[in-house]
Length: 235
Image 1 (cartoon, rainbow, N blue to C red):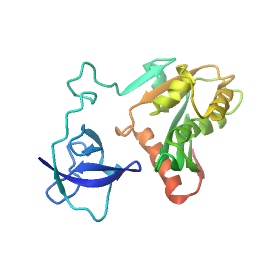
Image 2 (cartoon, rainbow, N blue to C red; image 1 turned 180 degrees about the horizontal axis):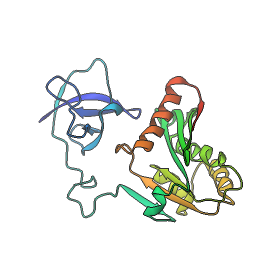
Image 3 (cartoon, rainbow, N blue to C red; image 1 turned 45 degrees about the vertical axis):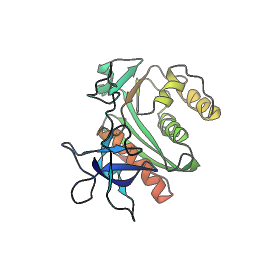
């Protein structure tokens, strides 16, 4: 049996493994074990992604069940940390390319939604924190990609590398998945992709400490908390 405390994580109630003081128990590296139900499969996330729910104490519950799909698990094949479509590892550090990082957040799904984007052009950097009103997580993820693509100076003559933790976004935009919803938004993004000489899609595992992925997540959540949109340019 383990000690658990109820916390909010990405708009949902989950349980975090608790330490002797009743706080989420941090492992080496700053991660915390969470479960979506007591006795359920173990997942991990960073402590700063969790907010303790008021009015609940520490609860005794079964140890988290091993998750064979997690890294280091005993499944046939652990999940990859990243995958590249349309390019290779050298593209991920190519300073001559545009690097578009994006993420979306939603509290409730559907619920209050925000999109975060960072566009890197050499030493120049632009950040968007965009309030979307009520929406879904998938809409927020797509808007994060779209606003970066629309900001590219035309004509685009260099490679564009899109970094995102949205498998849905890469699926409907680069892997031929059939979209059951958000058709108009997806069509807008495909229009924005028209004329680009080369696009590389880089899926990264979310909430794993990848700096610019975490920054986009922060920008998306700031938009939700502030109910406002901002654009900042650096360099």
